[in-house]
Length: 368
Length: 227
Image (cartoon, rainbow over all chains, first blue to last red; front, top):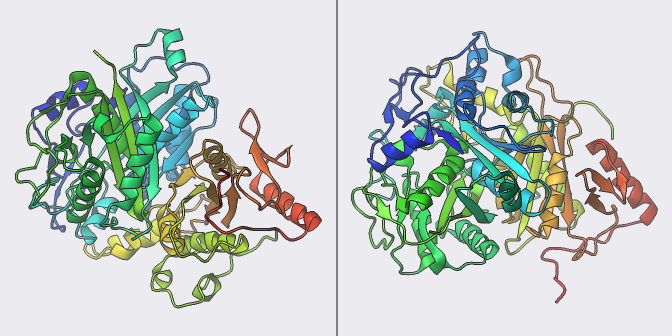
């Protein structure tokens, strides 16, 4: 697996800086943000457009750099909400840009060709739960025998298009997001990607590939309540988490820690606390959000969080929640600005998005 | 199916009562929401009292590009000063699925798939997989695309419009007037055992099946599961 985030060009760097409690949320240089109340985001250093093409391509190149050849018949599932949105912006401003990159089929076709895959790829868009849904889909494809191996690639960019929209919704915190903090005031946007090669245990054994962990449960549900706001009772997230636990044949007590969506908006974090308290009762389960460190990477969020979550299980350490200072009133969940120990092998990772979608994954680390 | 310009979709076509949301939706979301509503109406599932565990998978080539253009036009003139929050909330191709979930109480997974293939069957294929994996007993599956228009020349999807169908797990469903769908070993969509190569062909096969078998016997959600 691989990741590119505002904290670093690879997973090791991102992991090290996450544990150190650093943040990549800083003043935007990609476009003039001076007209907006919030002017920060987490962006990837050193991206350069080649031939007026999207900055998504250098992110993808970094992700695939050093990736071993894919197994024969490997399928490709991607996740992005806005794809080459910077190319769209260029074209609409009358600047040169390759129009063929604008539909998601542009980067999808580029990736398939780059990887030499001859099976048709597909992109999943489920708002901010896109890559969570893509990982769930890949796990289901493998579990059902429809595929031996699936490469999940997730990606999204910081753009003025998206930034202006969240700004118009008054959803951005000018000071940087503070997930699960009593004084949280909005999210911070981010960009990046992750590449996760998933395969059946049998295929991995046959090829001698040591896996870092497994996806053992998944669930998805719509709360059918509001177009952009979550259901306050957390009904969709509760349903998704319970589906995931049932799929994994485990109960709440088997889950050692939670990587939450934790955007830092008032309603999202409240909804999540409500849902997790419904699932875990009065248990003070370790819980974190990495969005204070790398921003909300939209369609890439769930995939990056799977990569970090598996690393968390391998190192038995949950990274700090950057920006968190004071707990929300009556919140029994254990959120901390410092790393927390994980005392088990199952981690719950969740994401929620516009349109009421909620998705949950249960990751299992290797014992020992 | 006939071809030609997509007729305007009005609130009265979709909802008999005034609907606060519908009038504010851009064309892409209106067409998608209308197609989902018509599919549910055809299946006798339009009316509901309690939320239902049904999911939606929509395939698309260009997604809500037309809405993206409309929204970005509100960003450009004022240098980002007056972007429309209402339009922005519709700049994900999934947004109409959220609207459909709210309007019709659907609590299953909702996703849009971008598929470069021209057969427009990816949504149907993935919905059939979800049904076979037991993720849901009911899935709405279909395709939606709108031309981007002259603002971005050169992007023209092969299929324009919205089309959805209600799929139920045959084990639990009494509705079979349109025929039975399944997937071949290689993942091809089959209608009554015959491989289908495109969405139009699938619709023709379903309608032909209905004309042979007479009226269909739709049953409302939730369907009773055998004990």
